[in-house]
Image (cartoon, rainbow, N blue to C red):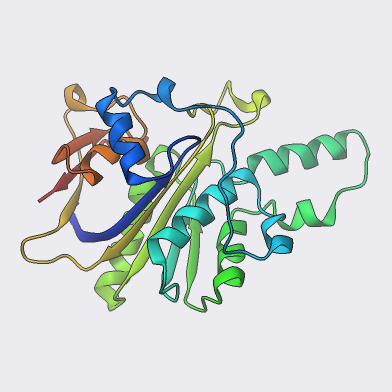
Length: 244
């Protein structure tokens, strides 16, 4: 596979207690460890959304919406790609529990249990009529979203925003699905690669150089300018991210 090239015009990341780029630089300076990210059930503020719409968003959707807004403000009318390993698994798990107990299902919870709920809420809140995609590819979800975005850029899109958001799954599923405690979201506003300033995504990385972090957290060191290359583990491939 040929390297995928693109530029990152702007980025935003959110986790409990880590809301600004300065917060994430401090996290890296302190060692960049998962255990240093608070796991308490904090929720990002969504002041840009009407209260009725805001109340419909789950914690992982709120995180996705927060970074999407910050990446695109003030121009929200561009193509979006929302990626997540587990999506609205907490909602789905609750609904399955209701079914097992033969209790009636909440129509609101059912309508928002789909994988593209964050994409729909964002389009409604911002009036964005451009296309939106929701995808899941396990540990390869972020690279898959970047590859999809690069395809849109090559097809002529000026800007594509990629949002990766996830949270640890419900207790019942943790024997099969591994993810750090808490919730995390990363937003990347992508534009076509330039001659001098660009990023590259390669399929293939030396196992000895792989970061212990998920890709969306490992990239923080590149986004803040501390590192120029990082390798991350995936399910189908290991991946190497480079910043020129």
